[in-house]
Image (cartoon, rainbow, N blue to C red):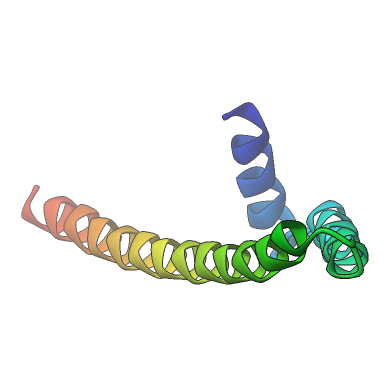
Length: 87
C-alpha cells in the first residue's frame, strides 16, 4: 500500500511512472516460461500456455481497472468543483 502511494506521488511529481522494475519482472517471467516450454514433462509444457493466458488476462484486468479508476477520479473532480461553486 505504501509503495502504491509512493508511485502515485512520483507520478504526480514527474508526470510518468518508472516501470523498470515491473518490466524486468515481466521479462524474467517470460524467459522462465520459454524455458519451461522445453521441459520434458507434458504437464509442465501445457501449464506454460495456461500461465501465459492468465498473465494476459491479468494485464487486461489491470488496464480495465486503471480506466475505471481514471473515470472515478474525473467524476470526483467534477463533484468537488460543483461543491466549491455552490458554497
